[in-house]
Image (tube, rainbow, N blue to C red; front, side):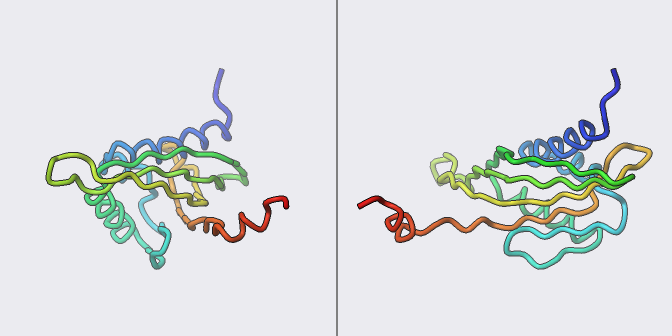
Amino acid sequence: MSRTDVELVEAANTTFYETMERGDFEELSSLWLDEGISCIHPGWPVLSGRGEVLRSYALIMANTEYIQFFLTDVKVSLSGDTALVTCTENILSGGPAEESGELGPLVGQLVVATNVFRRTSDGWKIWSHHGSPVLAESDDEEDDETPS
């Protein structure tokens, strides 16, 4: 049984995140279109072109000792040879190792992302990635919701 386009796009999206978890820069590079790509990491300016985008991932991989993505709310929309994926990235990451050689403290982060894919002769390739941080509610807001 052949996989549907939605299943193929979901698989391409999952591969994107699994490749980042493994820190496999060569494979990550192969997942992107050759030209016209863009990327916005949370808090970063717009990065355009293959050189800028891939340099950003090389920098992130070089400075991230551990990262794991738990994707939720994954939705795929298709229009011809273009696919739009929205999802929530529940990220667990660790900083550089301490002097003892142990992983630095783990940090959780919540990011909503939009990934745009284009169909090519080599399968679905990433055209654009945009991640925005989700602002956590403050303790004051949570206290207001507590019944009296």
